[in-house]
Amino acid sequence: MENDDYKGLVEDKKPKPNYIKNCLWAFLIGGLICTFGQVIHDYIEGKFALTHLEATNATTLVMIFIGALLTGIGVYDLIGKRAGAGSIIPITGFANSIVAPAMEFKREGYVLGVGSKMFTVAGPVLVYGITSSVIVGLIYYFV
Image 1: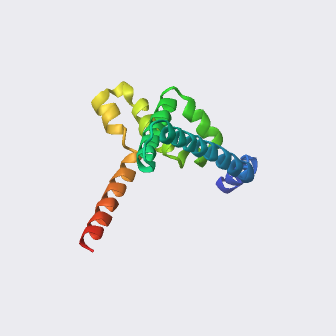
Image 2 (image 1 turned 180 degrees about the horizontal axis):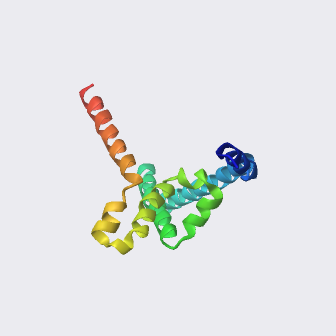
Image 3 (image 1 turned 135 degrees about the vertical axis):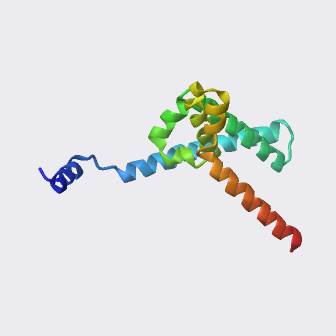
């Protein structure tokens, strides 16, 4: 069997993804995560008599903690398998992208394993996010 024939056979046998179903799952799970975040925000804002901005900051911290905790106990991976991008887009996905590599390389030690691998996925996001915010802040300050 030639190389091209084999590639054609593989393409014929490979399961085709159901894009509509995947999009619906991503929309539903992502929406549930965001709705849960809004419920937490409203609870914090009402219960602790915080301003809207203070409650937003507290909600962000709570959602990051929940995402990291669910990643640590292995639940967030199960959610991610079903939801796809719906679990990556909210702030909980950012927490997952930091905690998952750290857990994977824990056996290599805390410095060379956890410390060096923790920001492999989230590192570029942090670098570009912080850099762009500094540039925008400088432009705002001088203009």
